[in-house]
Length: 117
Length: 116
Image (cartoon, rainbow over all chains, first blue to last red; front, side, top):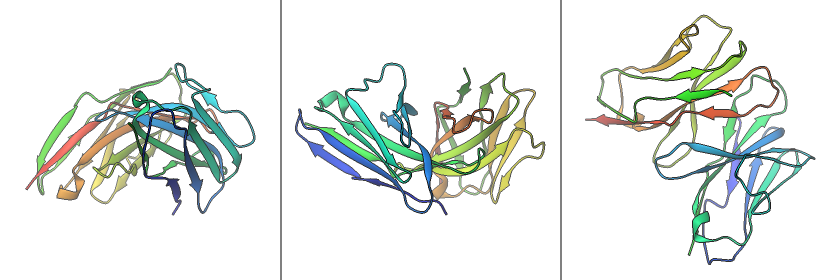
């Protein structure tokens, strides 16, 4: 089956640090990847849509300079939280969509728990 | 814009019993897909079942089945013979079939507890 690897699974760092999260599709090509943020006991909130070889599309209210997204290949997208602050602490999840077929489901990574001290 | 509503923040069921989780959605599109995802405490997102809107037959995956009522825009999930491992947050999700690579729109989620 389709596998998406997200790394790291847990990050604890000091305020002001930039943190990079990787999302890889291991056995399929993903033209489109999605980045979500999830607060405890809440639903997934889409932050941005990442398309290979082009700029990401950010949802309203998401700062693109704060959350940098790069999708340089068909198997890798990265989310960098720049100058992270305690309010950026959250659970971040990526998902990937197979390039072939419009009826393919999204495949999710296992998420990254980010804690900013 | 499409919206997905799950009106049951919490549900509970006895082990081996059946439970139904509700989901309604709003869309003006005719071509779309509906999904149920399970998120256990590990927070992995696990696809439980999917339904293509053009299919009249309700999707079934082992103990999981859906009741898809297109006219009513309802998409409920039935879990039969509930097991302790079914305890999780369940999210209903919508995806357009008219736009390539389109996003998922999630409901608020239903926290399911399975009592032994």
